[in-house]
Structures are given as C-alpha cells and as structure tokens.
Length: 115
Image: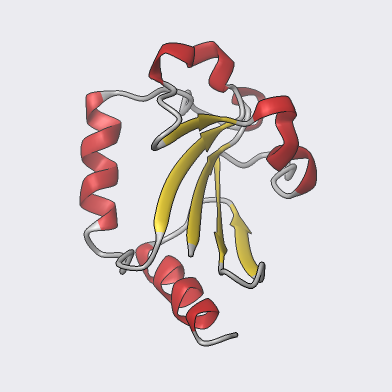
C-alpha cells in the first residue's frame, strides 16, 4: 500500500506549508504514530519541491515532477494538503484538504479489504 501525503502549491494555501523543518518532521512523527502504516510505504510529495530541492531526498520527500499528481488528482483550489492511499490493485482513496488520523486509518482499512 502506498500512502501519499501531498503538499499543495503555495498559492492555494493560507500559510507557508511548503517546507521541511525539524518541527514539521516531529509533527509528522507524532501524527503517524496514530496511523496503522504497518503495510504502507509513506511518502511526502511537494508541488513546489523544486523550491526546496535540497530537502527532497527521494526516499521520503519527493518533488511532484511536471506537476503530474497535482494535474491529475490534487488540483483543488484553496487547499494546503491532500492525501491518497493506493493499494496493490491500483484502487485508491483520496482526500483534498486537512485530514485526520482516523480518516487515514479508514482509507487503509477499506483498501486492505479489496483485492
């Protein structure tokens, strides 16, 4: 299962969320302790990743190259974050906007039960 945490363009968000800092990493670590990611690969994809290129490690943090994910899935205006969970069959659930631990757990559970 692939869990994509998407950071929207700066122009669609009311605060500057397009950075990778120690504080944001600590927040993510705390947040994801409440999400069952045992069978998931979690990645963070940034629309404006080229602006923080030195933080993109292509292990956990990625740039949305050619804005592919944005153009095809996450182009909702006035949103700071989005999430997508994809199972091995290619089925997915996504949400554009702020999401909760419970929401992610329900996406993961639902997609784990489909074959």
